[in-house]
Length: 120
Image 1 (cartoon, one colour):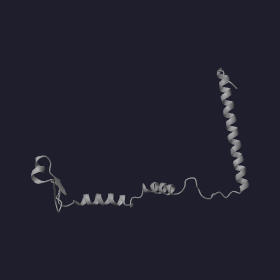
Image 2: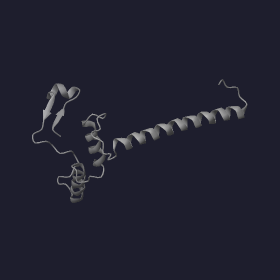
Image 3: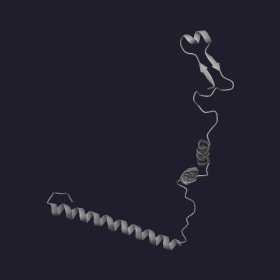
Image 4: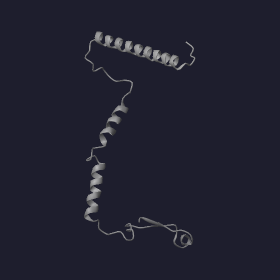
C-alpha cells in the first residue's frame, strides 16, 4: 500500500492522505514469492515479450500491410508477356458475359415454367 486516504470523520482528525515510504504489504500477503508463482510469472512475461511467437505473426503482417498504400501493390509478379495477359483478360471477359447470359436465360425459363407474368 503506497498511500492511505482518510474518509469521513477520520479525515478531519488525521489529514487527507498518509504516504507510506517504504510501501506497506497487503495484509495476508506472503513476504517472499513462492517458486511456482515466480516460474509462472516468468512464463507469462516471456510469452508477452515475444518468446511465444504463435499469435504474433498475424499482428506483424497486418501492421506491415497498413504501412503502405493498399492501392499500390507494387510491380506484378507475373512472368506472362503482355500478349498472354491480354488473352487471359479477354477470356475472363467472355466467361463473365457467358455466365451472365446463362443466368438471364435460366431466370426467364424459370419464370415461364412457373407461369408468372414477366415483362421482357
